[in-house]
Length: 267
Image: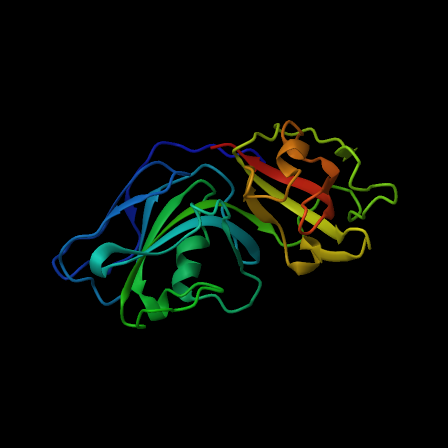
């Protein structure tokens, strides 16, 4: 699936303006860390979701694993609270019946991939999965800006293929190996790559992680430091739909990986 991002447009989807009738102003393009200007007035008391730009990709649906970058700031003082942009690791939100706050559901479900969405809400109602409320009160207001990379079925896999396994002859001296050729767009260094994978320890070869077992695909920025060692060289230039076996000879924790490339999002 290839995603394209159209020009920005503004569209409010719910009420909840600040007490003086103003809302935060967000600048920057989809995929870049947003710049958020928060007005001097007091925030409204009810959650508000505003679509800042609309993408042209597949719309997310209940049951999806939604992958998104998010910037979270406190209204008071415009203080940074949490960001995925600096770590180059988008958040993963699984909408499979597990508890996800109603505000995140409204912000993320039914949105086209490539959309930028703002949520303004009391912290107690804006808490996302695995995001603790540290140093703030439930009544404090948070401003969240999401860049929705896409929604994917939890069991997304290479069409017609069996689940991956670690090849018996793969070791730390092996070159990255294409197990299955892809026919989609090429993967670009610095872009986002959506993958399913299996990981095994070295030298025991014991499988210690599998996204297929854990609940669905993940997104990574294909840059050194944001992905395991060997991934940038091993995946760059491969095509979406491929399966690649590659060693990750990190000195602290060497691993063997087999990676299925589900999608690639060049920003």
